[in-house]
Length: 142
Length: 259
Image 1 (cartoon, chains in turn cyan, green):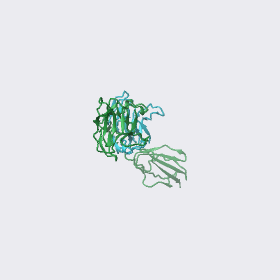
Image 2: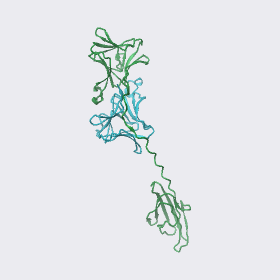
Image 3: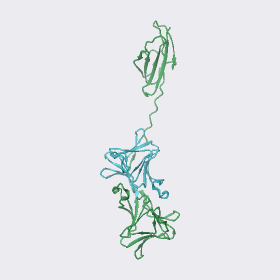
Image 4: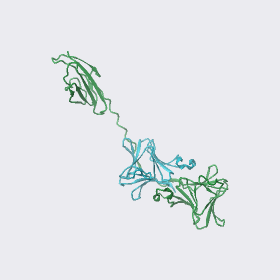
């Protein structure tokens, strides 16, 4: 159960990474926070990839203790056995089962080096190396 | 140019306030940040009160240096001289000029003790002292068009059924050199003999390992042509290994007693 910030990249991070980015994959229970922690993306034990927003009414002075009771987006893969979200070197972001069966993906395998970013405005985007948006949840503050 | 966090209240705050809330007045260039710093409400020098989101593409590792360049909401009062934003005791939020002319108001008076909160979901909310919201900028996180994030491929195919349990039942007799049947004692044997799943058998006897045999169907006494010649009183062991699931083995042991 590790905590990462902002980006899930396919590789090439220093170890340790000063920015606490996630490399390669998120396992069940791992969390990818937006840079300021107001949003988080987590791969749940039920196999669903879910993004939550922090609830201000529960927010104590220590914001690292804030609660995220409200889901704003999910992959819709509950019960399908996903145990790993993999950011592949070919640019595809894939949810795999323990038996390596893909159950969800972004279909972006033609963009090597693409990475997932959990933005501070709530949008979850898959970015190409040149900054082009390949996929987005389009759920954000506006 | 002061920085405050989260709440803009009309009443007295402790001094210093451990939560850095904004007391009563925001002045030109003062900033009210959401608790996590993701959103910023600022009274600009041009008199406009603007809520902005941090621009992720410009966000450096030190998030306190992030740039709030994406405006979500504004009072639209630029150029009208506002230099103060007051959270009034009556619940109204009002922009005033230096000469106390109101140029914008939330028109939420009638809620004594109300306060304004800059939320981490991007919304600005004016709420009563007990937390009931009655005004909002409605800039909270919400869907803007269709998501293009991901394609469901469906659940994985069901796992293959477990391999059938290995059932092997081997029997063979003992004969003296002149063909007189002897007796066999041992364990793991019943009659009739068969191997009901594809299996590989290995014969081990006093002389060491022998050539394996393979069967894909039933075998009967007599098929085990590789049965070694053993001496009276000696024991041979036969291990049958499933070719489907190599973890499944059965071992038979026999001791020959020749007449």
